[in-house]
Length: 151
Image 1 (cartoon, rainbow, N blue to C red):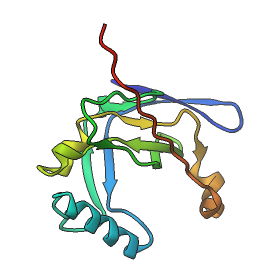
Image 2: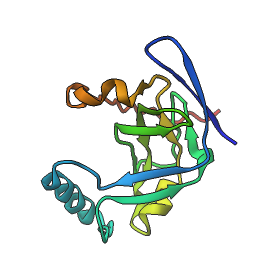
Image 3: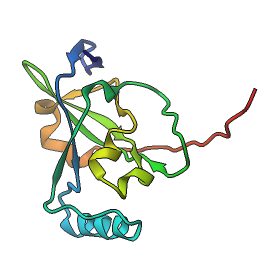
């Protein structure tokens, strides 16, 4: 079973065994932005969801804390987003990236979510400690590309 380790602001560490992993798709407070995202994906041939938000089960072993995700081709993408980590005693909030295979996504979003790791941050907050100022927290993500080298 996959175990992830989260460093909390007080310096303690929480080790969490991943038993279930769900990706929430088409989730957002601003429904106009959600609909714009659905339209953007429809132009790429991705079928829209029947309801929003949509939950996609992901194999728990895909939850990882890595600094790099290698992909098979250039039609993949990731998004900076929140992750809620449910533990026995707390709900933790961390940053995450559910990397999506856009080639596979046209055949099924759930399949594409299982094609690459779900990358979670190594630092987290207890949700109760940040709940009252969530809107002041900003996520930033970077994308880097590298050419494959052959030996």
